[in-house]
Length: 107
Image (tube, rainbow, N blue to C red; front, side):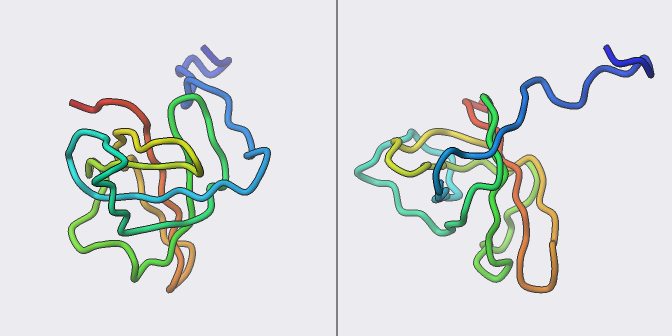
């Protein structure tokens, strides 16, 4: 706990990627399978942690209906796709947004 008596906001420390990491996202609730992975969104990863990441993307590339809580598959560079959940979406300007994604099986 912090000095304010509130629990910490994050469970894991954030860090910048060691290299350029591109996240590819498919907004679907399905089993992760590289053979059927068809991303609808891609963008650079700004920071990572053990259980998630933040990426930047063009707002017009975000499919209609994607909001906080949307389930997806995410693939980072050469890793295979994994289940994830959109935790937050923040507009940075009229064209760009920042998306927070939590890794894991949200079922």
